[in-house]
Image (cartoon, rainbow, N blue to C red):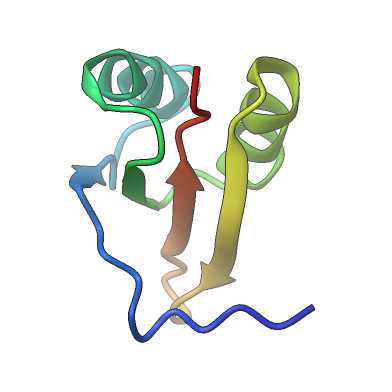
Amino acid sequence: MTISLLNTTIHHHLDTQGLICPEPVMMLHKTVRKAKGGDIIEILATDPATTRDIPNFCRHLGHTLVHQETLNDAPTYRYLVQKKTA
């Protein structure tokens, strides 16, 4: 399944670059609480543990991991998470 990201509206930006586990997921949890159902949250991270932690966070709490990518050699990881609707 291919999802077009060109028309994806990002409602919340979360920059966790330089932070290590568990901070990125704790910050995501806080942002999800503030977000409305269906909102898209963009997360930028440099901790390799997020490649495991963010998909697990989504799976356990019922949110949707819309997109996951590695942006460069640094590396920086980028995620788009959609908050579940009630």
